Length: 125
Image (cartoon, rainbow, N blue to C red):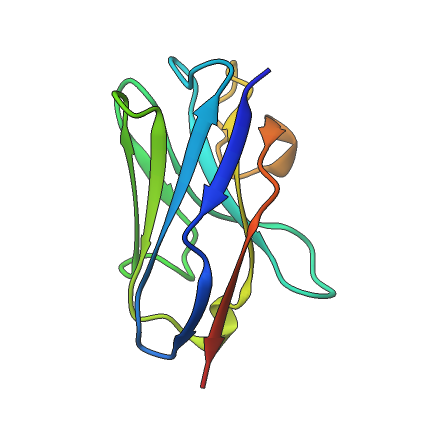
């Protein structure tokens, strides 16, 4: 099992930027994809972005495409989510998770097993 810890959340004005980090401990991400999801109050958890570990293919939800960038640092065993041009509708708890492998679907919640505790992102208008 991989322990994941998110950091970097906070309060920012609309149009601002935040950078989230997802650090793994216990075991590494090696060979597995990593995804970012978010959950707003009263809403279901939704896919934000994902990256495959070896080929670095990236996937984004339409709502964040062009504004968010996912990347990874294998030496630090960390995945990042750079969020620019933030909007109030981006307000949510953001979670990172390790993909289970064996599937090319990186957008479904049930394709991920190990999850972090989440970090709050609040965008004020």
